[in-house]
Image 1: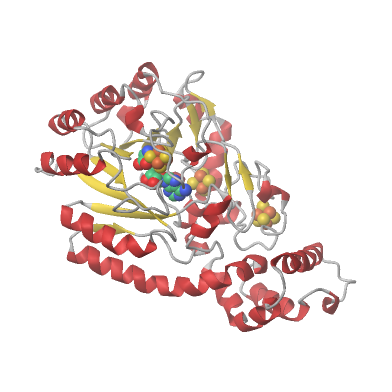
Image 2 (image 1 turned 90 degrees about the vertical axis):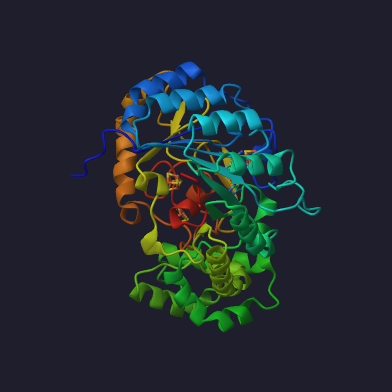
Length: 443
Ligand SMILES: C[S@@+](CC[C@H](N)C(=O)[O-])C[C@H]1O[C@@H](n2cnc3c(N)ncnc32)[C@H](O)[C@@H]1O
Ligand code: SF4
Ligand code: SF4
Ligand code: SF4
């Protein structure tokens, strides 16, 4: 029997979902959602009940935490109730982190780690809505923070989203922040909230276990799709998968489109106990070729980081099924949204669409309860939350994986919109790039 912890070790709290930026890759760009501000009374209650038992508090979600008018009081309440040795982190776009706030934070050690988001050093004409040092007062605020924090009691970090638009600048970003004396830079792949962001994605959801088999026949697949329209290929592949999964033995393999190469690959996959998402492979084929070069780029990034003495945290290049795990469960973390809802992770904060595995998915937010109506402890120990955490303990055994499933790019109902996966688990974690260390949150 799994013994579930009495309290989370890490609590992430979203002070507000309101933001003063509208970054093109962010969920906030959907606009028109209602704005919430967690009240000081709610924070005080959590601080008294839960903070004495946790090791880390993370104060951000979707929205700019410093847009909360009482953000500084939130830090003060938190510091007062957290046990010694615990830490406070927040991520910010940096525009509102002015001199007065920095003085208060540094003089009173109100945070142990401050992370600024930066995706490009200078404003870019093609991608004007990214975090840059040029935006508002970011550069000046960061420089003052570094100067004021000369005793280095606070770790200062940078969070960068890696995408096609900025991949050529990552090396410069690392060098610049290394030379500025920043402690670390954490790079995340992009989570595609919008259809146009599919073009920005620099990863595949196919795992390396499946890729080994698929790549053996690269030239055959290439030949097959040569001259076939994307729509026609998708239609034929859908037919093949439909027949393959429904095990219609009476349909002779050769009557299925692409049967020879399909069956050969499936037989090899069966031997190795992996499944294949051939539709996605064919779509991602060119991108996958580039991923082998990414390893060289990552080595170069590591070298620049070493030279400029900055810690570098990079995402995974090719996902490894055996390494799949929920980062929130692994950290024994819970997340509280600015309206008081207790949600499993950053990804489940707010309703959104995603465009992974060549399809649109409607992701509704998922809540285990609300601290405005119930105590956090009651929610944390509820059957629903406990069941979820027990399943997450052995994610690969309990949760199917869509990245290697042929149905995910072929209209699987669960993958398109259901709250549960095809094994009946809620929330839907089967297509999560965070669980493969592709997309990353500061935690
Ligand atoms: C949502 S923001 C909230 C905190 C604050 N407003 C900020 O920008 O730092 C937290 C982090 O998420 C990152 N982010 C936003 N959209 C993303 C996406 N589509 N994929 C991956 N990370 C994203 C941001 O760049 C930022 O570093
Ligand atoms: S990434 Fe941060 S700053 Fe940019 S829009 Fe989203 S919440 Fe605002
Ligand atoms: S969606 Fe991903 S990060 Fe969120 S709970 Fe599921 S596995 Fe964890
Ligand atoms: S939900 Fe299940 S059947 Fe559907 S794509 Fe994912 S793994 Fe495949």
